[in-house]
Length: 128
Image 1 (tube, rainbow, N blue to C red):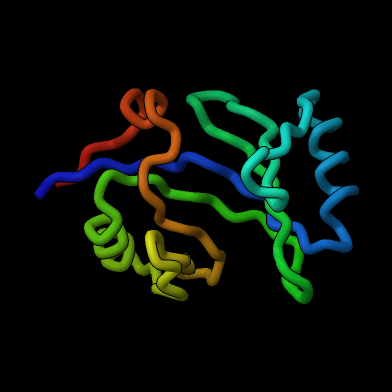
Image 2: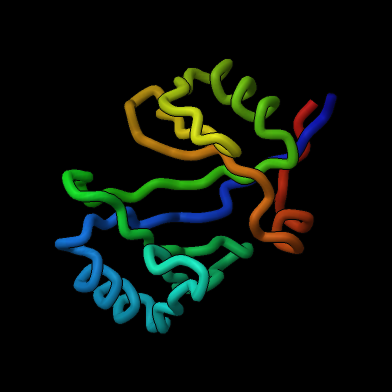
């Protein structure tokens, strides 16, 4: 069954010791205001960039290294996970409604449901 997906979000994963400084730095570097998520103190958005691509900041737990990761959004999580596994990705953790995975080099990314609405409809790639 065909499905669609796209790279949708670049997340800055920052542990508590780096969260405030990292958020302030990237807000300044991008010229954006870090808008806190009113429903989640661990999230802030730096907004949408080219092609509806979002830059977000999330506070991770103690002991997590600062890192970047991307979210691949899709209208069919199991189909997209299988497609990416066929390309060499590996499942790392079932997070309930989404999967945390690694690419062949070990870089972390997540396969999530549609998050960006109109941008997903405009920029997603269709897969057989």
